[in-house]
Image (cartoon, rainbow, N blue to C red):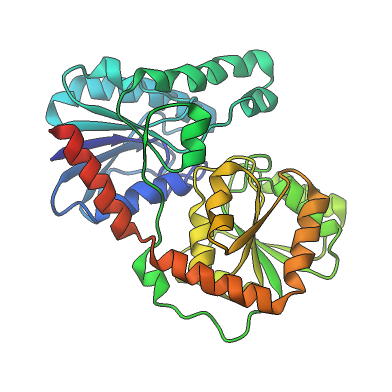
Length: 360
């Protein structure tokens, strides 16, 4: 099968290289021996077409060091690319974002097209971009998915928010991560890993909570557009107990995850939260915001939630778990079991089965 997958994100993108990019890489590297896969992503300074683990990565749009220009140029370039090269594929997958819809249904009319939905911001778009500038994106997010009959979402919460008829294929964890045993004794720091986006990831809430937790230590790992804003906020709040570790990945990331006392994910928007699976694999309990997309971790017993945006409630939940060693060990064991049952190999097989069904 020849697959074209369009997604602006890429793991090397300095602006947006989050869970969506990781997801498609992990899925497709397990399918590349049986299928011809081309991933078309947004360009950025230094981006070069290449093949990795059997996947062809092709970059389109502006190479200038400007995120806004890059993301809008990607949408136009992707539509043109699909119009010109659509005959070279059997199936098209469009990873949806309201900032750069590629209108794949108009670009190819005789090939099956799948829309992939990660998360929905809803009215948050209007709060972030203000009403008039944000209104086009809000309307695109609300109505664009309704035109597709083949849709994948990563969680039941995402499916409900979009109000579409979709198959749910969640995220997974690399089997190799499970091979690393958790340490006998956890260290005393809290840990966050992810894209440094102040509002989307709720990092403003986390920093405000740390002001209420002077005896706790927090390590924030990642990169993103709001890094300097967050460091400025840290300084303004006088938070000597917060450390920015920069971008970490692979074994270093899992080493921190395994050693942490608690993992904290205060997001306002998520698709599924791959990092929660990583915390589960590290036997590290989590404190997560109460958005529906993260409810799976609470239901599985390895996380507790707090009221999204409520720094006081977040601080109280951290105190509650931090002072209960037996409960943390019990939650860590449940996390390990959940991670073992949700690997990328399982996800890849589900994804492949859905593609086969669409092609019939």
